[in-house]
Amino acid sequence: MDEHNTAVAAISARVRTFAEKQEKFRVYHGSTNSTRKSERRADNTVDTSGLNHLLEVDDARKTALVEPNVPMDALVAATYDAERRRRLLPLVVMEFPNITVGGGFSGSSGESSSFRHGPFDSTINWVEIVLPSGDVVRAAQTGEHADLFWGAASGFGTLGVVTLLEVQLRDAADYVELTYQPFGSLVEASAFMEKQMREPMVDFVDAIAFSPRSTIVCLGRLVNELPKTPPSSRPSRFTRRRDPWFYLHVEKRTRNTREPTVDHVPLVDYLFRYDRGGFWVAKYAYRYFFTPFNRITRSVLDRYMHTKIMYIALHQSRLADDYIVQDVGVPFGQVGALQHWLDDNLPTYPLWLCPLRVRRDGPPEETRHGLHAEFADPSTPEYLMNFGIWRPGSLDHGEFVRQNRELERKVQGLGGKKWLYAHAYYTEDEFWQSYDREAYHALRTKYAATYLPSVYDKVKVDDSKGREEPRPMGGVRPFQGLYGVYKAWQGGDYLMRSKKPSL
Image 1 (cartoon, rainbow, N blue to C red):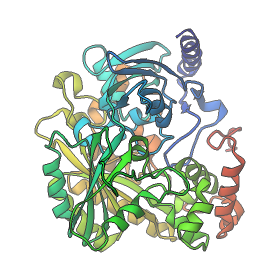
Image 2 (cartoon, helix red, strand yellow; image 1 turned 180 degrees about the vertical axis):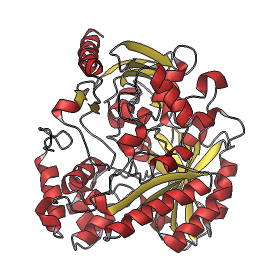
Image 3 (cartoon, one colour; image 1 turned 180 degrees about the horizontal axis):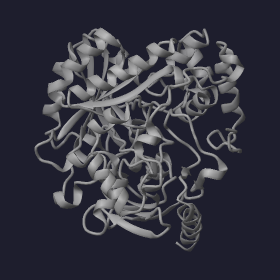
């Protein structure tokens, strides 16, 4: 802990210099899974990239003490060992191995176990946080600074700098028994998922909608043994170069059948099953580069098809500005309405469906805080169905903005929420119609954070310049994309600008 405390003291001192001048700052973590353009510079940033250590795993209490920049794959490797030296697992594991613990907490990440355990922030017992004054405090789910805890959860660093987290763990198993159940409509699949969420033996639930008439629900159950008889005795894997991309495997396994199909998947392969290909978003890269999309090309280009490299290439090429990357949640009763709207206005397949329990447990006076304060209210929906909507947008900038804004308005009209890791095109008034301005600003005032950028400041897209800003290689296809791939291959920093831009 001595090394950690020294690092936190340096961060605290750095924050105090901004507090004395009441000058906004950004936090530099060293990586990101957001597609937003980075506004970080050396002169406006608090560097926390060195906080990347797992300090302790407590087997008896089933907790891990983790610095915020520890990625998911490192956390899983420290808590689960297939040779049975340690067999624990975080309650929620984000599907991309490079998503960090701090990022999952500050951005309310969810995954296929979130129907039971909620977003990742709900699986954190407490956080250590450097306040905007420079003071260091501990904030817990209930009791000590509970209001700060729930404000910082999904607060995107606008209430302070998180420097340590205690993560809840559970017993692990060696395999996930994964059942693929086909449905002829997304609404039928949604009703089935809602029923399965009440089954105690079900550990994971998500679905892939391949078309308006084909949705495959994926139900997972932790097991320690493979079946004795082939072909089920051979596990299905998804993390190696020669393995299929998960969504293509599901499509193949369920083709021409309405009966359930079962795979047994090694635990780590299941947790990071969507890493290769970024769900299915990487298929758009093959189209962009005029490259055949087949098993051979996917194998040859495998290094560039993992999400860590893909995010670097997107940032360096600025191609993220041309893609609609949105995750939105609506109440279960509105699933059909959102699907019909998408089919009519923004046809997108495949779609990812993932049920999330958003209700906060604990006394309302402690949990009704921050952007999502209403999640502590028993009168609001306990669950939302997340839609992963990822596709190319219009190359006409005005139309591209309209597409995003219309989606935001539709979700808002259906009583849903948009998760804020991606681009947000709301006006400020529209934004605060969906999020709890009063609760959020009360916390910002209480903890002297009003001089920091607000969540709206951090997530909004300034589209006033359209696509006029210079792009790599003049924006010429495919050279703009090749520049991003080259920079990803080259490595190095892609988030921190070295100089303050001229005015």
